[in-house]
Length: 153
Image (cartoon, rainbow, N blue to C red; front, side, top):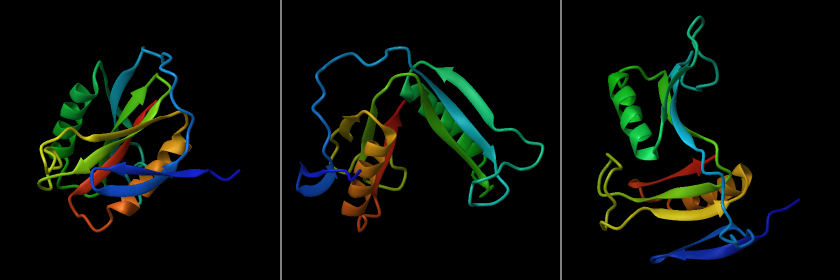
């Protein structure tokens, strides 16, 4: 089944994202928690964990911001090991969002124009969000300070 695409504008940018039914405002699951997950992998393909080292799970955190603070701490503590990677994972809820912006520097903390990050969605499946993320990533491929991520269940 092919995804139908629609054009979306964000500021001066225009890009194609999967067409999804409008959200009816209905509730998504509220019982969500955030975890920082990762560890040391065999190599930079990040496919297999180092032998005898299980994946680390830190949390749960009540908010994404709390999880991101923990992620930054883990990321900075392991910055010298190119084979170590952590990510924030949301458990619970059923919506996916594509979130990001063009940032003022490579810390990817403050947006270039000081406005909040762009939030596209909600998407009801990871695949729909991934297609929107790819479209947004390709639309900003020439901007080294642009970064987008998928947040959600």
